[in-house]
Amino acid sequence: MHVQDIKLLISAVAPEQYPVNQLPEIALAGRSNVGKSSLINRLVQRKNFARTSSQPGKTQTLNFYQLNQDLTLVDVPGYGYAKVSKKQREQFGQMCEAYFTSRKQLRGVVILVDGRHDPTDDDQTMYEFVHYYHHPILVVATKMDKVTRNHQAGNLQRIRKVLQMDPADDLQAFSAVSDLGKAEVWQWIADKM
Ligand code: GTP
Ligand code: MG
Image 1 (cartoon, protein in one colour):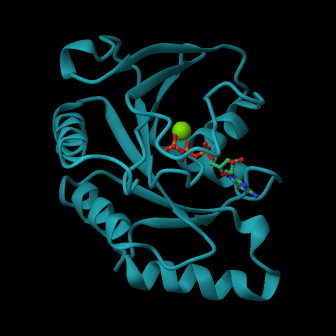
Image 2: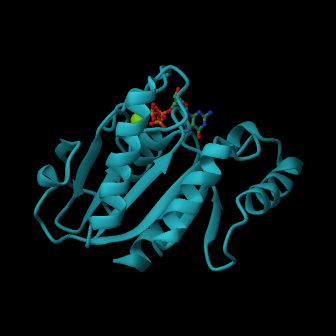
Protein backbone atom coordinates (compact mmCIF):
# COMPACT_ATOMS: atom_id res chain seq x y z
CA MET A 1 0.00 0.00 0.00
CA HIS A 2 1.28 3.45 -0.85
CA VAL A 3 0.57 5.75 2.08
CA GLN A 4 -0.01 9.23 0.75
CA ASP A 5 -1.80 10.52 3.76
CA ILE A 6 -1.43 9.66 7.43
CA LYS A 7 -2.96 11.42 10.38
CA LEU A 8 -3.24 10.87 14.08
CA LEU A 9 -7.01 10.73 14.63
CA ILE A 10 -6.94 10.61 18.41
CA SER A 11 -5.01 9.43 21.44
CA ALA A 12 -7.70 7.63 23.36
CA VAL A 13 -7.96 6.00 26.77
CA ALA A 14 -11.68 5.08 26.75
CA PRO A 15 -14.08 3.56 24.18
CA GLU A 16 -16.18 6.75 23.92
CA GLN A 17 -13.10 8.41 22.42
CA TYR A 18 -12.44 5.83 19.70
CA PRO A 19 -12.91 7.13 16.16
CA VAL A 20 -16.39 6.46 14.83
CA ASN A 21 -15.31 5.61 11.27
CA GLN A 22 -15.81 2.08 9.96
CA LEU A 23 -12.39 1.59 8.41
CA PRO A 24 -10.73 -1.78 8.93
CA GLU A 25 -8.39 -1.60 11.87
CA ILE A 26 -5.14 -3.31 12.80
CA ALA A 27 -3.70 -3.01 16.31
CA LEU A 28 -0.03 -3.22 17.25
CA ALA A 29 0.89 -4.43 20.70
CA GLY A 30 4.13 -5.27 22.40
CA ARG A 31 6.44 -4.56 25.30
CA SER A 32 7.72 -1.07 25.90
CA ASN A 33 10.68 -0.31 23.68
CA VAL A 34 10.13 -3.33 21.42
CA GLY A 35 9.71 -1.10 18.37
CA LYS A 36 5.97 -0.54 17.76
CA SER A 37 6.28 3.11 16.81
CA SER A 38 9.35 2.33 14.69
CA LEU A 39 7.41 -0.35 12.79
CA ILE A 40 4.59 2.10 12.07
CA ASN A 41 7.10 4.68 10.82
CA ARG A 42 8.72 2.06 8.62
CA LEU A 43 5.40 0.92 7.17
CA VAL A 44 4.32 4.45 6.29
CA GLN A 45 7.83 5.56 5.30
CA ARG A 46 7.97 8.50 7.67
CA LYS A 47 11.02 9.09 9.83
CA ASN A 48 9.34 10.04 13.05
CA PHE A 49 5.61 10.13 12.60
CA ALA A 50 4.72 7.81 15.43
CA ARG A 51 6.93 9.07 18.23
CA THR A 52 9.82 6.77 18.98
CA SER A 53 11.91 6.96 22.07
CA SER A 54 14.82 5.32 23.78
CA GLN A 55 12.84 5.98 26.95
CA PRO A 56 10.45 3.07 27.45
CA GLY A 57 6.83 3.68 28.29
CA LYS A 58 6.53 6.75 26.09
CA THR A 59 3.26 5.84 24.39
CA GLN A 60 0.60 5.79 27.13
CA THR A 61 -2.60 6.02 25.13
CA LEU A 62 -4.20 4.12 22.26
CA ASN A 63 -3.04 6.13 19.27
CA PHE A 64 -5.29 5.80 16.22
CA TYR A 65 -3.58 6.57 12.91
CA GLN A 66 -5.62 6.78 9.73
CA LEU A 67 -3.81 5.80 6.53
CA ASN A 68 -5.31 7.29 3.36
CA GLN A 69 -9.04 6.50 3.36
CA ASP A 70 -8.22 2.83 3.77
CA LEU A 71 -7.15 1.69 7.19
CA THR A 72 -6.58 2.59 10.83
CA LEU A 73 -3.49 1.45 12.71
CA VAL A 74 -3.67 1.49 16.49
CA ASP A 75 -0.49 1.87 18.51
CA VAL A 76 -1.22 0.18 21.83
CA PRO A 77 0.92 1.36 24.77
CA GLY A 78 3.84 -0.85 25.68
CA TYR A 79 3.47 -3.23 28.59
CA GLY A 80 6.00 -4.73 30.92
CA TYR A 81 7.58 -1.43 31.80
CA ALA A 82 9.02 -1.83 35.29
CA LYS A 83 8.64 1.75 36.46
CA VAL A 84 4.87 1.94 36.45
CA SER A 85 2.70 1.73 39.53
CA LYS A 86 0.29 -1.10 40.24
CA LYS A 87 -2.57 1.30 39.57
CA GLN A 88 -1.17 2.25 36.15
CA ARG A 89 -0.74 -1.42 35.36
CA GLU A 90 -4.39 -2.09 36.17
CA GLN A 91 -5.51 0.89 34.10
CA PHE A 92 -3.47 -0.42 31.20
CA GLY A 93 -5.08 -3.86 31.51
CA GLN A 94 -8.57 -2.35 31.58
CA MET A 95 -7.85 -0.13 28.60
CA CYS A 96 -6.60 -3.08 26.52
CA GLU A 97 -9.46 -5.30 27.58
CA ALA A 98 -12.03 -2.63 26.67
CA TYR A 99 -10.42 -2.20 23.27
CA PHE A 100 -9.81 -5.83 22.30
CA THR A 101 -13.24 -6.97 23.43
CA SER A 102 -15.37 -4.16 21.98
CA ARG A 103 -13.80 -2.92 18.77
CA LYS A 104 -15.93 -4.30 15.94
CA GLN A 105 -13.76 -3.20 13.03
CA LEU A 106 -10.60 -4.76 14.50
CA ARG A 107 -9.38 -7.21 11.84
CA GLY A 108 -6.12 -8.38 13.32
CA VAL A 109 -3.43 -7.81 15.91
CA VAL A 110 0.29 -7.53 15.30
CA ILE A 111 2.17 -8.59 18.44
CA LEU A 112 5.76 -7.45 18.47
CA VAL A 113 8.43 -9.34 20.37
CA ASP A 114 12.16 -8.69 20.59
CA GLY A 115 13.75 -10.98 18.01
CA ARG A 116 16.98 -11.18 20.00
CA HIS A 117 15.53 -12.93 23.04
CA ASP A 118 12.92 -15.43 24.17
CA PRO A 119 9.48 -13.87 24.67
CA THR A 120 8.77 -12.76 28.25
CA ASP A 121 5.88 -13.78 30.50
CA ASP A 122 4.20 -10.50 29.55
CA ASP A 123 4.53 -11.38 25.86
CA GLN A 124 2.97 -14.78 26.52
CA THR A 125 0.11 -13.20 28.45
CA MET A 126 -0.57 -10.75 25.62
CA TYR A 127 -0.51 -13.52 23.02
CA GLU A 128 -2.89 -15.69 25.03
CA PHE A 129 -5.19 -12.76 25.72
CA VAL A 130 -5.51 -11.73 22.06
CA HIS A 131 -5.79 -15.33 20.91
CA TYR A 132 -8.55 -15.96 23.44
CA TYR A 133 -10.66 -13.29 21.71
CA HIS A 134 -10.11 -14.98 18.34
CA HIS A 135 -8.35 -12.11 16.66
CA PRO A 136 -6.00 -13.14 13.84
CA ILE A 137 -2.43 -12.63 15.06
CA LEU A 138 0.83 -11.82 13.33
CA VAL A 139 3.80 -12.11 15.67
CA VAL A 140 6.60 -9.85 14.49
CA ALA A 141 10.14 -10.44 15.73
CA THR A 142 11.73 -6.99 15.76
CA LYS A 143 15.34 -5.78 15.77
CA MET A 144 16.42 -8.74 13.65
CA ASP A 145 19.20 -6.58 12.20
CA LYS A 146 20.88 -7.20 15.56
CA VAL A 147 20.69 -10.98 15.22
CA THR A 148 23.36 -12.72 13.19
CA ARG A 149 22.14 -14.60 10.16
CA ASN A 150 22.88 -18.04 11.58
CA HIS A 151 20.83 -17.33 14.73
CA GLN A 152 17.74 -15.96 12.99
CA ALA A 153 15.93 -19.21 12.20
CA GLY A 154 16.62 -20.59 15.69
CA ASN A 155 15.33 -17.46 17.38
CA LEU A 156 12.12 -17.61 15.34
CA GLN A 157 11.63 -21.25 16.32
CA ARG A 158 12.08 -20.38 19.99
CA ILE A 159 9.54 -17.56 19.75
CA ARG A 160 6.94 -19.88 18.23
CA LYS A 161 7.61 -22.46 20.91
CA VAL A 162 7.72 -20.19 23.97
CA LEU A 163 4.53 -18.37 22.94
CA GLN A 164 2.92 -21.75 22.17
CA MET A 165 1.68 -20.15 18.98
CA ASP A 166 -1.34 -21.49 17.18
CA PRO A 167 -0.03 -22.94 13.88
CA ALA A 168 -2.67 -20.80 12.14
CA ASP A 169 -0.97 -17.62 13.35
CA ASP A 170 1.93 -16.13 11.42
CA LEU A 171 5.43 -15.15 12.52
CA GLN A 172 7.60 -12.65 10.65
CA ALA A 173 11.16 -11.39 11.14
CA PHE A 174 11.39 -7.62 10.93
CA SER A 175 13.81 -4.74 11.12
CA ALA A 176 12.98 -1.07 11.27
CA VAL A 177 16.40 -0.16 9.91
CA SER A 178 16.30 -2.34 6.79
CA ASP A 179 13.63 -3.63 4.42
CA LEU A 180 13.43 -6.96 6.25
CA GLY A 181 9.81 -7.99 6.74
CA LYS A 182 8.20 -4.79 5.54
CA ALA A 183 6.52 -6.26 2.44
CA GLU A 184 5.34 -9.32 4.36
CA VAL A 185 3.80 -7.26 7.17
CA TRP A 186 1.99 -5.12 4.57
CA GLN A 187 0.77 -8.24 2.81
CA TRP A 188 -0.61 -9.66 6.04
CA ILE A 189 -2.44 -6.39 6.72
CA ALA A 190 -3.76 -6.22 3.15
CA ASP A 191 -5.19 -9.74 3.49
CA LYS A 192 -7.28 -8.56 6.47
CA MET A 193 -8.82 -5.54 4.70
P1 GTP B 1 6.89 2.41 23.63
O1 GTP B 1 6.18 3.48 22.86
O2 GTP B 1 7.64 2.91 24.82
O3 GTP B 1 5.99 1.28 23.99
O4 GTP B 1 8.05 1.80 22.69
P2 GTP B 1 7.92 1.29 21.19
O5 GTP B 1 7.54 -0.14 21.19
O6 GTP B 1 7.06 2.21 20.37
O7 GTP B 1 9.43 1.36 20.69
P3 GTP B 1 10.12 2.43 19.73
O8 GTP B 1 9.62 2.27 18.32
O9 GTP B 1 10.03 3.77 20.34
O10 GTP B 1 11.63 1.87 19.71
C1 GTP B 1 12.42 1.80 20.91
C2 GTP B 1 13.90 1.86 20.56
O11 GTP B 1 14.29 0.72 19.78
C3 GTP B 1 14.28 3.07 19.72
O12 GTP B 1 15.54 3.52 20.16
C4 GTP B 1 14.36 2.52 18.30
O13 GTP B 1 15.23 3.26 17.48
C5 GTP B 1 14.87 1.10 18.54
N1 GTP B 1 14.42 0.16 17.48
C6 GTP B 1 13.14 -0.11 17.16
N2 GTP B 1 13.06 -1.04 16.17
C7 GTP B 1 14.34 -1.35 15.84
C8 GTP B 1 14.93 -2.26 14.88
O14 GTP B 1 14.26 -2.97 14.10
N3 GTP B 1 16.29 -2.33 14.85
C9 GTP B 1 17.06 -1.58 15.69
N4 GTP B 1 18.39 -1.73 15.60
N5 GTP B 1 16.54 -0.72 16.61
C10 GTP B 1 15.20 -0.59 16.68
MG1 MG C 1 5.78 3.80 20.92
